[in-house]
Each structure stands twice: as C-alpha cells, then as structure tokens.
Length: 53
Image (cartoon, rainbow, N blue to C red):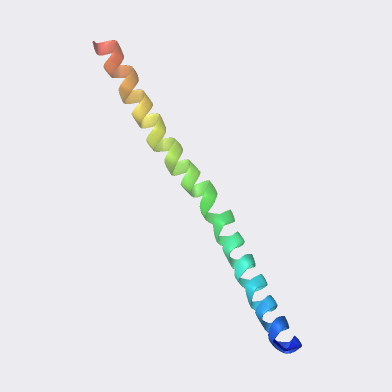
C-alpha cells in the first residue's frame, strides 16, 4: 500500500470516528433520559401494584 493510500484511509477512518463520537455524544443523553422515564414508570406501576395487594 502506498503512503498516499495509507494517509487517505487513515484520514477517512479518523473522520468516521469523529462523526460517530459526535452522534453518540448527542444521542446518549437523550437515550438515557428516555430509558430513565420508562424505568420510573415501570417502578411506579410495580410500587402501586404492591400497595394495592
């Protein structure tokens, strides 16, 4: 593999890594918020069911 091809592949992979990291950084807080909301709902339902029985 020539030096130019190696540099091109390295640049492309670095760019993909940067893009994926940006997407994860953006999506992770939103996903955690949604997961926390559903978890709170499930725990709340379980709590009220245990009180009702």
